[in-house]
Image 1 (tube, one colour):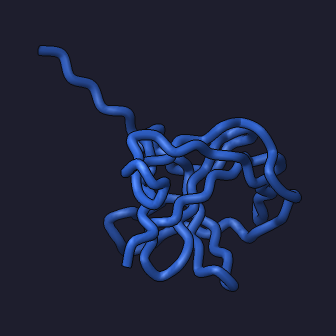
Image 2 (tube, rainbow, N blue to C red):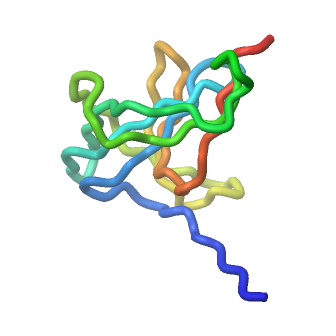
Length: 115
């Protein structure tokens, strides 16, 4: 049996799809596309997503990105995890909705609106 795993990208790259988990439950994923980079900043554009394998009501399931813009471009500072199991991994933080944006790992993201 041949099993392969895809390593999660560690840095932001131009044109890359990223995923951010929003809120305290961290189960409301939002996808973004990197549209510009500098040494200190990254510009994201929100993109659409679609539910797959949902509960029949659209309240829980898994989401995949759809590479179609859904909002305005915004800039965030590039940050790097240090002294954690994600050492060297880049991320960006949106304070008002407590979202961490990281390079997407290519897997469907858990979506769950239940309490």
